[in-house]
Amino acid sequence: MASSLLCFVFVLHLFCCPASSASSSTGDVKWIRTAKDTSDRLTVQTPNLTFSSDFNFTVGVTINRSLMYQTIVGFGGAFTDSASYVFSKLNSTHQAAILNMYFSEDGLRYNMGRLPIGSCDFSYNHYTYDEVRDDENLTHFTIEHDKGYIIPFIREANATLNKWSNDSLYILASPWSPPAWMKVLDLPYCPLSCLECRLKDKYKKTWAEYFVKFIEAYGGEGVRVWGVTVQNEPGACPVEYEGMHFDPETQRDFIKEYLGPSLRSSHPDVKLLIYDHNKNHVVKWVETIFSDPEASSYAWGTAVHWYSGDDFENLQSAHSLQPGKPILATEATVAREKNPENPKWEHGEHYAHDMIGDFNNWVVGFIDWNLLLDRYGGPNHAGPQECEGLIKCGSAAMILADLETQVLYPQVFYYYVGHISKYVPRGSVRINSRVTGSSSLECVAFLTPEKSIVVIVMNTGDESVEFKLADVATAGAAGEQSVQALKVQALPHSIQTFLYT
Ligand SMILES: *[C@@H]1O[C@H](CO)[C@@H](O)[C@H](O)[C@H]1NC(C)=O
Ligand SMILES: *[C@@H]1O[C@H](CO)[C@@H](O)[C@H](O)[C@H]1NC(C)=O
Ligand SMILES: *[C@@H]1O[C@H](CO)[C@@H](O)[C@H](O)[C@H]1NC(C)=O
Ligand SMILES: *[C@@H]1O[C@H](CO)[C@@H](O)[C@H](O)[C@H]1NC(C)=O
Ligand SMILES: *[C@@H]1O[C@H](CO)[C@@H](O)[C@H](O)[C@H]1NC(C)=O
Ligand SMILES: *[C@@H]1O[C@H](CO)[C@@H](O)[C@H](O)[C@H]1NC(C)=O
Ligand SMILES: *[C@@H]1O[C@H](CO)[C@@H](O)[C@H](O)[C@H]1NC(C)=O
Image (cartoon, rainbow, N blue to C red; front, side, top):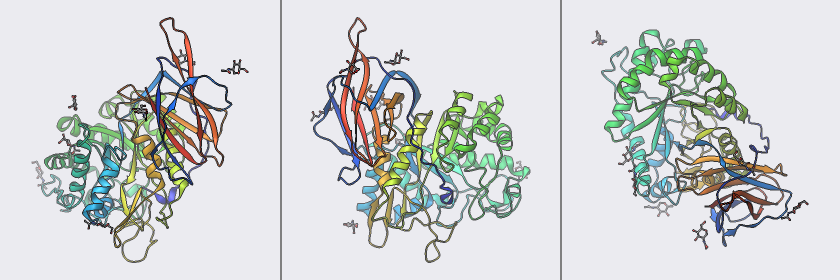
């Protein structure tokens, strides 16, 4: 992650495409709201809304379920060493609360998690799974470190999910750096330049086999790895924390010659994702790697981070180039909350804005960064020294925990992300939606596997916006068009989810 690179542009968009729909929409519409200066936080509203015949309004949100797009894979956060460490320091009441808030049916219904392969900036300290120099056959490989508190946290998360769903938690694992001995400059970090921060040729095979050992070791602990990315932020070359450099060509060749064949022969079911860095350069990576048929044959899709800004049009271009390769959002965070007791509302809007824009441009899932951090935004063994003491800090997380007083501070973006993650199950399909007549509303809509419609509408403006939500449905055997609509008031700085069949 790169909390110092939070230079996003907050542009308000009128989303998507044309309007209208098929199949009938009648009866009750359940709706859920979070709104600033109210007590609504993912709060189910009473009474239900009901569709009535059409009425005239200048602002509209229009749903056309007959235009269908990508299938959704899921939502989650990262089981970093820091998040898992903080979880392990919470008392049992709070541990249960965290599991419930993220993975239960009452919580965000998370069904994915990102897992660093070895340490990253958000680790208590530096570690790898093989510190024995030149151990080319990985005889000394061990995930002993992760058995302390990372694997127990993942197991409990999966068990919480399994209480209400037989869907597995999808674990996406990403390395920040190989053991230093595999790299040209014998260091986990990249203090000089990207050039030295890469694999030694003689250890490329060893590094590919390291992924295989990792998947097997985790499998041995009952944790199935769903997918891996080749490298976290391959273009970053971080000076102060673990990193390794690839450019599109060297990553393509590493996949083709080493990682692809190793994974295919041992774990062909594990998905391989390229890139895992900011949306600004995604098109170049997709073009370079997937235009090579052999490299492409090993890779399932593309992972992106949000630190370069919206860049939604790049997702659209990447999809157009390679419609068969799903795009997954794998990391996002905001700068440290100095006052976790008084969370910033705009972080909620930033998250939902990015998610709505991503989903409207083909993204299939969204994974947040650290699931949990302490109240200083740590621990973090690297990065800028912002806090007192030896343990450095630096990021926000949806839930910050004061370990001394044992108090949890949920941040506003917990609720905003929940407006989407909780109501859009795996296997849902994005359908057409659009806003007309307002620059402060943003929307996205889905059709769930149970054939319910889910519409998310965010108002980022300072004014209330009254709008009509219309599902242009075809009713009657004659194919007669009957337009039904809801009349809704979107409060200032609010987000609402509508559910109906
Ligand atoms: C909804 O989408 C379908 C499929 O593209 C299209 O035929 C129909 O005209 C759309 N309805 C409206 C009202 O735009
Ligand atoms: C509200 O609508 C939902 C379906 O969308 C339904 O399950 C629920 O019973 C309704 N609630 C009330 C109070 O009518
Ligand atoms: C909405 O306004 C248009 C144009 O003024 C009119 O033709 C239409 O009948 C009106 N629809 C309703 C439902 O009032
Ligand atoms: C955990 O800490 C909270 C806050 O201090 C307290 O309310 C709760 O009872 C504690 N639980 C246990 C099991 O000690
Ligand atoms: C690794 O295994 C190969 C093949 O079995 C062997 O030739 C080589 O000596 C081993 N390397 C080390 C460092 O043991
Ligand atoms: C999940 O459980 C439901 C019943 O609760 C069952 O119908 C379904 O087949 C199960 N799916 C899988 C993949 O096991
Ligand atoms: C979650 O638990 C289910 C049921 O025991 C299991 O099939 C699945 O592999 C587990 N997933 C992970 C990531 O541990």
